[in-house]
Length: 199
Image (cartoon, rainbow, N blue to C red):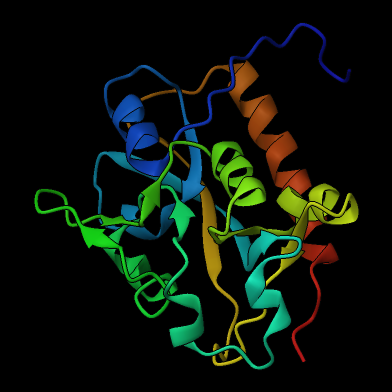
């Protein structure tokens, strides 16, 4: 509403596909977890802030009936997520018995690799698979009774994504892109302020 003349096409992709599209000039910028982009000289990366994640499953999942879950309780259930950079292996190595490492890229591939968060959420809501996301992504499904938070008590800290905007260093972003990035910054500040404080 603030800028009715701004025209954008939004694409949801897993991080390697987003990075590939960025490097081949098929998109102007990408918003993603920037941990794997450090040291890429051709990219300019603007941090947006950190998002704490939560593990989740479908409502009524067998794991929700157990007290004080341990890794061996969780491992029999497939983990659904997009591919991850090798720096994120700690998110799955003790709970996903089916994860693999891509021999070419070194990326982590969970038991069920998906190309979008929405697809992963749909799989979780209809199966015994588990996943990971930001609370803002699943709160409506939790409120509707379709999903539930999954507490992994041995984890001392929640998973964190260091979000940022990446674009090619030699490229000048169009005004529409800058306008949208500013909108994302405001939304990130709102989400960060609303996040629960860990006790």
